[in-house]
Image 1: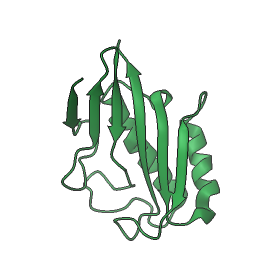
Image 2: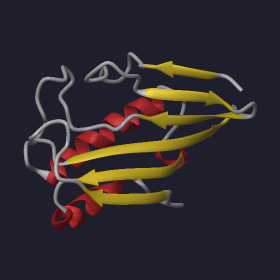
Image 3: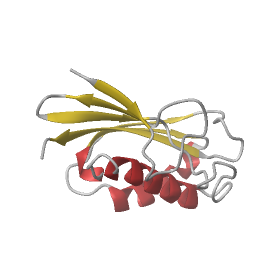
Amino acid sequence: MRKQLVNPTSAPAPAGPYSQVAQIDLGGGKLLILSGQVALDDDNKEIVGPGDMTVQAERTLDIIGQLLAAHGATFADVVNIRTYLTDMGQRAEYAAVRGKYFTGDLPTSTTVEVSKLFRDDAVIEIEVTAVVSAA
């Protein structure tokens, strides 16, 4: 088994000193573990849609889609999603956005409310794990 820690150039750079994706070779495929993502702009300076769950969920899932695509994966390859919300009262808005990205077989899921994320204006953070078959 071989692991690689990578930051694909086709997706926004990490917002700090960490890797965006851990890729683990499974022989007949690969396991992708993505770091938690928030709705930062491409320069990692500003949150896109401060305080707006719908806008932030869309931006965050778009970033996750870019990270998955860089490894030949799609949302259909996601097996687990973990979501951190600063207000569980906005779960319906998040669910509406999430339903646009995840169709067909749905991944396992955990959604929790947290008091704060690493940016005061972020209302959601999402991390996923995906399994991709060898081509």
